[in-house]
Length: 105
Image 1 (tube, rainbow, N blue to C red):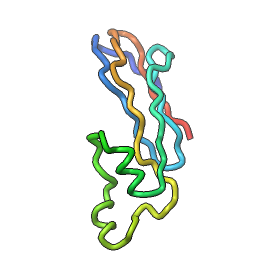
Image 2 (cartoon, one colour; image 1 turned 90 degrees about the vertical axis):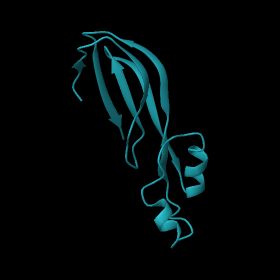
Image 3 (tube, rainbow, N blue to C red; image 1 turned 135 degrees about the vertical axis):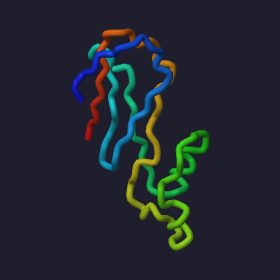
Image 4 (spheres, one colour; image 1 turned 45 degrees about the vertical axis):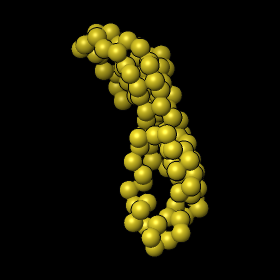
């Protein structure tokens, strides 16, 4: 993503990435300095998802409850992203500073 100049002064409270399987992380930059490295956390079962998200407000995988009635484990034993790490209390973003995001496979 190309850099975007902030129109406002703001406090960055939290950032987390969104990726699909086989990806590694999302970096968020302010003025070309990494302020957040949100990492993909992989698991191979619904139990891994439950464990990774036990203290999270994230929604379960879209098909978890409907598929679990038909299959013991809808995640098929293959590694899938079960959670993204979250960056908290990042600090100030000042008017005119640039912010950009990139993802790594």
